[in-house]
Length: 494
Image (cartoon, rainbow, N blue to C red; front, side):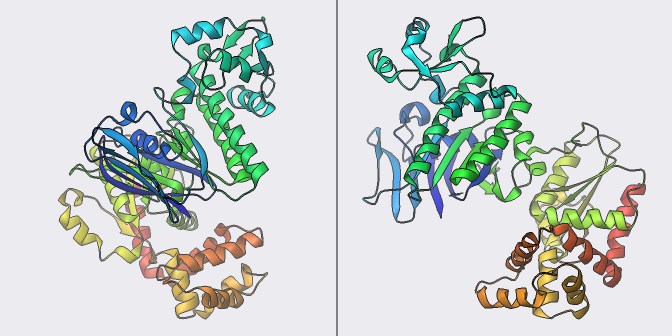
């Protein structure tokens, strides 16, 4: 099930619809500055509670935010100079929370000077020890030490009410005996305390009620407050929590450290077009989203090869190894997500000089779109100078479906049946696919999913399958393969 959000006339978003998957895991909303990431996340937060709508979104004419989940709807409409809620009679059964940007968000509710003065004058007896979940994870994420904040306290509810404070203020007792209130903590500490506090509430509700309600969390540009090492530990922590309580976590982010931890299918790239419209690219690969073209060790590459997806990346890497094209050269193969994305990124790289002067660029697309490319380039003349080539097969998924299912290639079938699928016969997997698959699978992705599931059940990975397929291609698709090898060799020599 998805949570669908429709936005009309809010800030720079004129008309946009996005489906938020409710499957557990990490998801990223990314894009260039000004594309609308923070606006989109702020709009999404209104699914949970009444926001200060005028402060967040102003008073735009004909503006609306609408959510749909199953038969339930919820939303907001601006009319007669005010925001009004617009909900269906059917209750939307959804849990979650929002943590905002540097300006907005739960952690800045107690930062007025009058409130800070009240917090400064509270005593340790006004507080209780903070929950272990918050204390230990705060120390682990920020300092890689779960005992770092063992003296973390939270204000007693009765005191919070008596002092007319909002939220649940936290306090930290330093090793010198100094009591630091949350308003005086660093932005990173404030951020993490707010997220961990809300996650703890959500975690307990899910564990106690066990009612099957989906959970979704929205976080806006959290990397602004965190060091890269802390950000990585936070991502690993959130992955674990998402898995434990079936939680979908959406970030808006520019961070390559965060994006590289998220699979391409879970990355949504907001693109602000020349006609002022906003579009969403999904799946999107981290390299495309960040234009990150350099090696993780900080050094450059002698050559960068742009391909469509990670399957094409694995095929190219196998070919480079098998044909011994990697001698004395650093080559990085980057998936970018879709053939048009690949061409666009190649143009950006060349026109903006994103590579070092000595680095060469190659572009390799799946062969199934070879006939479509000339028309695309003809309609977009600026891409006409980009030299490219194609894989020796249409795509791995289509190749497998055509040769194992549409018309069985006995040589390839025997190769895979004998050396890869040794638990369940390949024929049994194909019959199960034929029996259960009622959808149009012309791209072969559903069959490929069946094959991957079988590999996982045997504790094998897809590289074993791809290695044999590449070897088969090298033996049986020599003409097309030689075209690609000649193209790559020429690029390397130039």
